[in-house]
Length: 259
Image (cartoon, rainbow, N blue to C red):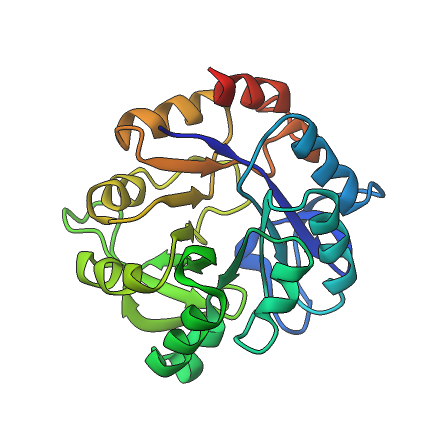
């Protein structure tokens, strides 16, 4: 059944909400919706108190390792962590308290799937503790009857020549426990979700999947539940009152999950 998944997005060691399409290596043009002096551990402790599991701690760039580990330590086994994860450091984060590690760019060097890396990573942490982030951007016209999305890596800056298809999802599901998919075009904009992507994932993902991007009200949780037949979980970030948003109350999301 569809659940609300919380997040802790980290940039320069601080909790922030950022417009996904504005991220770049140089840092120029960055659009920040929210930042706070509250620690990552404060948010993790809140999620723990309310029994909200499966949230994502995402390290956006360098300088976030200590902040991420503080959040994981505050809620052992309750949070997943991603951003710069490789087969060489994944166990470090699991030992720090993460339930799963989230990986994307590392398995797509030079924009191509490196199956040897993927297999090594899956064997290192165990399939049941790996989440693949297949965040993507639409490459077809919104009016197209056959929508298409390509995977975006390197903090969504680089579009690679691998599409989100039924075959892709089936293939990659053999190595991981869940998928996390941000619709990078609408991430952080609070202008509505990519309904077609949600429905596509609900139909073709053979494993649990969480969608993120564009949610702006509590009705979006109900809408996601309806159009996915309860199969897709939803992350709400910038619209949430915890992060300065006015569209969704965190306490309402907690009630939604408990109901």
